Amino acid sequence: MRFTLFASFILSLFFSEAGFANGDYRYSVDLTNVKNDRLTVNLVPPDIETDEVDFIFPAMVPGTYEVYNFGRFVSNFKATGKDGAKIEVKKMDQNTYRLSHASKLASITYDVDDTFDKCGLPGTSNKIIFEPAGTNFEAGKNFALNTFGLFGYFGGLSSRKFILEFQKPDGFYPSTGLEDIQLGANKDVISVFDYHDLADSPILYFKPDTATVNVANTRVLVSCYSPNRKLTAGFIAATLKEVLYAQRDYLGGALPVDKYAFLFYFNSQPTLSGSNGALEHSYSSFYVMPEVDSTFLKQQLRDVAAHEFFHIVTPLTIHAEEIGNFDFNKPRMSEHLWLYEGMTEYAAHHAQAKAGIITIDDLVNVMMQKYNNSLTLFNDTMSFTYMSRHVLEPKIHTQYNNVYEKGALIGMCLDIMLRDLSGGAYGTQNLMKDLAKKYGKNKSFNDEELFNDIEKLTYPEIGTFLRKHVGGGEPLPMEDIFARIGISFVKEKVSYEYSLGSPELGLNQSTGRLFVMSVKNLDEIGRELGYKKNDELLSVNGKQIKVETLKETISEFYASMGPGSKIQVEVRRKSWIPGLRKIKVLKADAKKVKTTRQNKLSLMENTSDRQKTTIKSWIGIK
Image 1 (tube, one colour):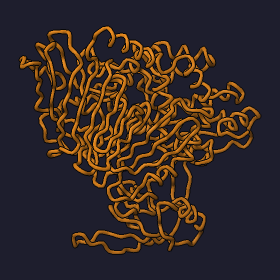
Image 2: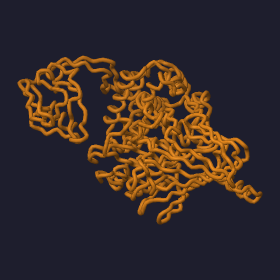
Image 3: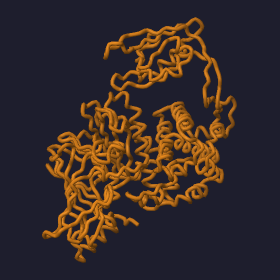
Image 4: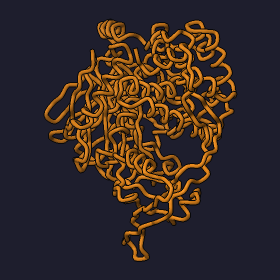
């Protein structure tokens, strides 16, 4: 059990008066001394009373759902004894060093390589660390410090206080969600309560570009590292401000933290993992994203930040025993990823819709895209609780990303069901508040009891839904769910419509243009136009194609189509000369082609008062 901060403080006073000389970890790191993206870490340890002790680096940390073995990046591990005493060190595995004669230990030193660009070290090439969970040491420019990638702990002594001393370059500032910070001209001292809090607290060190937003009772720090200044903290803060206000209102006007930090690292080069994203923490979130023009990132910033910020509810406030007492080296997984990630993803979008930041059409479109992804990319009949419990197993881990697809849909289904059953008076917002009251940051639930607890708080139908569609392998009842808000759901619908050829499109981040990723599924019009892979789209029927106005451009195109219409698409196509592109105009006569649409939605012609009440409650209409 973890003590409260006040209890720990009283105990520390008692122990110090009773003669316990040193119960703290005292780490020091010189950020001005970087050699080949490598830092040296020094530790003056707490007093060790046993003759033998293990010094441990984490195998895994909360929120990653993958074993990374951070000890792989540690080298030159040395232990020094008091008054010349010999300390024997034996490396037990990638993450563990066993020290003999440990009661005589005076200091430990070791080197740590960063993870952002290192894959040639022994044991590092087969498991690239997702950058938001990693470290980057770039001399004189920036230090992205996920603390678990730098600092270890002694087995059985993770609940001691950790004091971190950083020697820093001139003008550097530590952006973090932590508050116990002593700033100096060339040295900062940061203190945390225990190793769990340390691992939960990333630090971004660089010459500051920061902004602050006050949201209800919470001071929100936005810190931005953008090497070419394409993005700024001021822009991000302005972009996130309305989302944060929406989340404040969504959570009832107050937030469960006093300070929160958004730490943004924008990468001018592709990441080693090939991915971008974020990792949530209790009082902060750390983002690694491409450094592209701010216009293209605006809604993406809102979506990803809204998701990570909502993690202050789950798992900060509502979590299972497996998370509340997380084992960094022999982790046990909770069954309820649908709650931690899925409900969080749903709330991130739903809050924006209720606040008017996105439209109800946008919300439904996002949810339907997630539904299509869950069916085409993942095993729809696998029990979600089984997948969560076994997510670290290689064969099951391939299903993990479904937490953001089907997991979010589970949240939507629960919300609509609750509002329908309660006459619009109760939804998942209310459920999460009630669960937070029942549990809380310092009280974990038992995995096996959660469905029963939710059923007691709500309705028997909710318990049945959870057991069948979350604990069991039955597909989500989408037809029934949408019918409750007056929307007809049809699995497959065939129609004849005008078309632009159905090429599969992607975004070229360097040019900001849409391009043809694949011509595999072109329809009759697409084949007649003659799209080729990697064509960049410039205009359609004389209207310039821009990502930010794409929806309006496509709508205008379809509205202008009729008998005798022509289609003209201007593209930039690769030439046979390397690096050269030429302008090509693709032409075809417009005509309707057979179109098969999966999972089609349409408004019901006649809706009941109950359906009207439910949808008004769902989208926030009084």
